[in-house]
Amino acid sequence: QADAVIDELDRDLVGLAPVKARIRDIAALLVIDRLRMNLGLEAQAPSLHMSFTGNPGTGKTTVALRMAQILNRLGYVRKGHLVAVTRDDLVGQYIGHTAPKTREVLKRAMGGVLFIDEAYYLYRPENERDYGQEAIEILLQVMENQRDDLVVILAGYKDRMDTFFRSNPGMSSRIAHHLDFPDYAPAELLLIAERLLAQQNYRFAAGAREAFAEYLAQRTGQPNFANARSVRNALDRARLRQASRLFADRERRLTAEELSSIAPSDIRASRVFQAALAAPNPKT
Image (cartoon, rainbow, N blue to C red; front, side, top):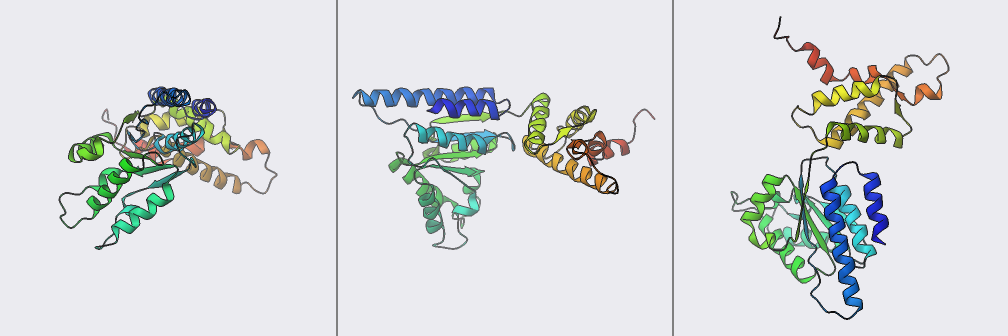
């Protein structure tokens, strides 16, 4: 049953070979554990709480959703749903607000997977009046006592998560699986772009694929690049430019080919290219 979800993961997600290999290992552990239980070979249930580290847009939330489906199909969680939250969903601003907020989130997540993005923001030792530690204590208790009905995945930048775990050994000891999500290579980002366009019945016109490859070569080295998320945003802006271009020519009948094609000009009008053109040439 888990094979179908893992195969979907392989098909739907570009790259991430180390992550996919680790998920297969975890699935194999769960299958063998279930077979042992069926044969009466008693053993302690495996700990399934996880840490996903990596830069934004590397597929952490998507993989968490697929992990919830795998755990459900193998009988380790009842519902197989994913509840994705941040600090603001767990921590209150006043005395007495944090515990109810955290418990409400945990109630919604029971039977599935709780995904806490940028989990290190729960811990703010520089602020003695911060209530994040209260949320952490409640999470620790539930992760230990109800681990047969809830899997918690903590996510964020690797360096900050490492610091968080060093400062919270109780949390670190409850995390059994650490998965590091690498940045996508340029060729992988280009493939992601083509897939995103195809999902909405668009495609690159002649020369546009090469233009987008040039865009990626410049954009990936700039601040705040967020892998697949930035690719999606860039394509949204290209579609906006395409719509504006076609709208200006609306007096004639537009073909399906024109309506579904992203032209090189739709890519090259990006501020990334404009900034490069405006930059002074050191040779002049």
